[in-house]
Amino acid sequence: MTRFATIEGDEPLRVVLVGAGNMGRHWLDVIAETPEVRLVGLVDLAVDLARGAAEQRGLDIVVGDSLAAVASESGAQAVIDVTVPPAHHAVNTEALFAGLPVLCEKPIAPTVAETLSLAAAEDVTGQLLMTSQSRRYYPALAELKLALPALGQVGIVSTEFFKAPHFGGFRDEMAHPLLVDMAIHSFDVARYLLDADPVSVDCRTFNPGWSWYRGDAAATATFVFDDGTRFGYTGSWCSPGLETSWNGNWRISGALGSASWDGEGRPRVELVDGSAGQQGRTPEGRSEIAGALDEFVGALRTGVVPSGDVHSNVYSLAMVEAAVLSAENERTVQLDAVLEDAYSVALANEKRDDVRAALRSWGSAADGLASVSSESAA
Image (cartoon, rainbow, N blue to C red; front, side):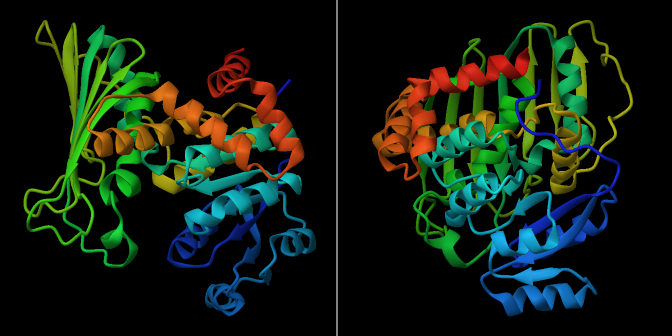
């Protein structure tokens, strides 16, 4: 028995895309390149913008400013949410309670509390809610993960991220632009590589004198995972010259050897006996959001819980909130405390009685998330 409703059949999955801005247009291109899905509707509050995007691509689809109306008229089977982050909770909730599974751009919600609400909404509706944590979907990263068992017990994972983008706009005004808008990718990859969740973090942030950001654009953080492994993150969004890839530079140190990845090419492995480990083919698969879309469709066809399921993604968001809290208070922060504080907020703020009842039945964030994880493993 699957935890969420599956969609049978061989016909392409009929999807509605919500959001016709720059990222939405990127998704339009990816959907067009994916024979397993067919776009049947496009939603945006700026209807002329959505209509223009559809006409530019010669799309004969339903266009409007109401998700419910467009989904009903088009016969949609699923939703892809590419709205701005503050709208994610409302759009995702509306879609789930309309009986539509959702693939949502990251972050799946702006806060851990809202994400817990969405996890409970997934429980109540029985519809899949998955986030597109796009940095997970690199074949070379999958190859790196496959190499880890040869390293024996892993003690340290580290990543360096140094870029100097001039975005302009809201990022320049954020209090923690690097941590809140970008670091979640690296934090999530660490969870993916280790198949584990952190228990604590000690983080410090600062803003170099030459920075063009108002808030802290540089950070160092050390996470302790539940098996004792340390994950160290060092990053800056105002470091011109010798920039890393957008995936960062990775190094993993284990009892039997080490592995590294520059974020672009194939990983390197060197074992204690001097060998390079087993060199296999790089796993096949599409990268970034195309890879997320493929996993979403596969999950709906098979019932296999995807790695970006909302219940799991909560922990990646909690890493960000805990890192910010640690930096602002200059102390080590426990992830359980962040989750339980968010659980209290979620209960207090929930507007739907059925979702609030589901949240209350958990007893705690840890118990609610753990029960779903155990069901998925079974």
